[in-house]
Amino acid sequence: MENVVLSPGASRQSGRQAEVKHDTQVGRKAVIAASAGNALEWYDFTVYALFAVYIGQNFFQNEDPTVQLMGSFMAFGLGFVVRPLGALVLGAYGDRVGRKAALTMTIMLMALGTLLIAIAPPYAAIGVGAPLLIVCGRVLQGFSAGGEVGGATAFLVEHAPVEKKGQYASWLQASMGISNLLAALVATVVTTLLTVEQVGEWGWRIPFILGLAIAPVGLWMRRSLDETPHFRMEQERQKREGAPKKSPLLQVLRDCPKELLVGTGLSILWAVAPYSLIIFMPIYAQKTMGFASSQAFLAALIGNLFLIAGCVFSGTLSDKIGRRRMLNCGALLLLVGVYPLMMWLQASHTTLTLIVVQSMFCAMVSMFVGAAPAALSEIFPTHVRSSGMSLSYNTAVTIFGGFAPAILTWVTYAMGVAFAPALYVMGASLLALVAIAFLPKPSA
Image (tube, rainbow, N blue to C red):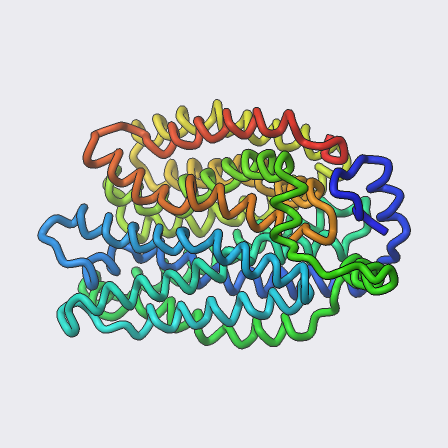
């Protein structure tokens, strides 16, 4: 049985995983279904950031456009405050009931949050109730997202043969790239076909309505999945040994404090880099560098192609050269490469340069985040894996990632700090390099 001991060693882990039989066809189906459902769910989450300017104009009334944008991003960030709660509840639910049940629950909650945002009347119609509806929608989205990373990664890793764990798990982040691609595509079409006034009045709702239309597809795919062999074997072991049922949350907090600390440190860059360089960058390019929204969204659209391919490449390569080497490579690239690229974009103010820079940002981010899910999963044993991963990742996201757009907006416009996203990513890269040094031997 895999990882029944809370401090897994390399030899014990490899031997126990070898006893679990994997059906290749079932594994591939799991990758396709879980990745598609994950992409659809994160699409709903991503379009909020892309249309934050228009949400600010409709729901956060102020004469200063910067204050409107900060209000919109604060609501975006509030969704992250409840992510640890979602991680605790949904992560423990996945460890107790099953990965499949937890994944189905997350997409239902995400759809409900998206519905609230899509139908919320503007501030001019109902006053203070309007931003409250936006906040409620974001809270539901954040609660859902809190359980997504741990549950989806555990599902993918536990369906994977031992020699392909990195490749399977990489599809978690690759599917987030697909969601970014879908969101950027819809944003590009909406802002190209409609006038600025039309987008501001009602066009910004179109991406959220589309998100509602595809949510049932993801729900159907999640219901068609098989439970993972590792989870079934763990359930059988507990039943056979008559082990009393314990709270996965209490177990991971009590028995895995070092693993939680290392996992959180690893997750800081995983959280900061995508939110600073991929999600926030289209807004930064418009507000700070003077690019049109259509230019920024086109660059995001092309850049996410590199993110998707890069994630799968990184995860697959990590199976061959080791997680530690792959993560070190990604963190070092982000540490030394982001600031010069930002300077080049400032000096060469063209659409082509924006596309190249955004694509390079996405490629560098993918080198780290493509290998991160498998590395994080190897820190925790099966019976607390979903809880441990969810808690580690969402702690980092809540503190460092969720409020990144609001913080970067304030630092850039209120304090006048140039290239704030680059400096933020560089700091996170240094923290990640320290955490990588403490990864357990299976990730070496």
